[in-house]
Image (cartoon, rainbow, N blue to C red; front, side, top):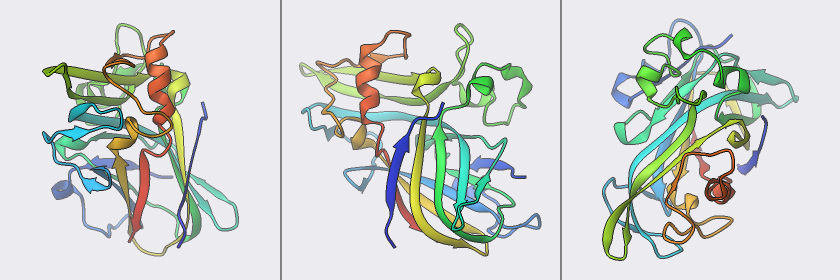
Length: 249
């Protein structure tokens, strides 16, 4: 089947996230569920944490933190009806093995696309974080991705190290603010008649080699999404394609 990936900006169901050994069995008493698993890769090979990689801009890098807040899960049926999974949020921390999301009680049927957002809608982003339980995906105690000093959440954390004139230096990108939310959409024909699973690659090389070749040494190695932030603006140019649908089971 053909898979088509689209990214765009957009300013019934319970969701969870877990490590593989903590996930519930594939079929539960409360109905059909859909697992979405994220597998970090570099140049389509499984990522080895701590290994050095060479970017298209000839930076030597390692990865230390790759974290996401996900929301806006939408499944599109073949007749065009959208199944919107309201109040569904997920916190992913790939190095820690927190790589799977479980959408529970998903309606059975024939579908033609799946979508999700890296980020949160404005009301949730700027709402009171104390409303969430300690084990909720949006709990600052769990995800450590809320900026109390400025309000709002960090949607995507990418951190690691690179060689700067032969010396180890850190890089840190914290993608935040409403304008930096991104919806990722994948066109794919699939059927849900039992509990099923999507597997997505998180193509970490695309952060640095996609629409632009991003250089940590010349374009900048640090951004926390300032109101005026040319470093983050250029970094965000590579968000298209960081996820790739690998399989549906």
